[in-house]
Image (tube, rainbow, N blue to C red):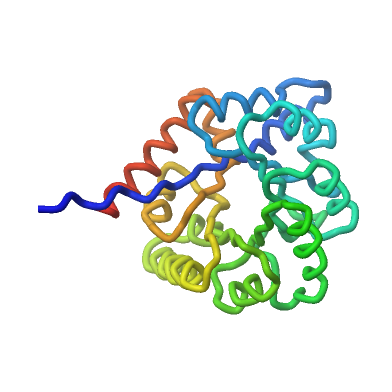
Length: 252
């Protein structure tokens, strides 16, 4: 009897934006995002995600300097498709740049990037970042139209927006889960690496982590909030265990 195939590894990217949100509410230097990034690395994170927004509401330029000079694990820099953010990414050359939609009035990213409708605008950003050796991903809805657009733009990676899944329940949640599964499977079938994230918690991560065509989950706000009660290290370690268990159960 042959042994079952080992579970495919699922990476965890920890978003540290909201450590900076807490710091900025009071001013000064505490709590330090770079300290959170190092704790995340020690707790099992495979990468760090940070969103440098145009209004600098959380991560600031100095934070990016510190992350680039101190991190021992990859940095995924989330940016809007603007000339300012392109110049910053090219100056620092993070491991990856995820292009996300951005509106100044939103509390958080409200949905996926319209890669299809914004194809002509996005093309040069994807090309220039890729030519600089930065792995480009597009944060999009789980839609074939958007996936095909990402493929035609030459982005090697997509990140599927899981916010709607996390906010729904019952049959509506299961329908959204199916949409994510279908999108993840389709994206890998056409040669894209597929990630997912937004709104994931201990309660919602399992079904998403079980999708074996996903290579990475990016989780932030929930982990920073949970850290208030249990600490950042235990929160990340528990998330890591839940992800690994879901992937192992799926492969069994």
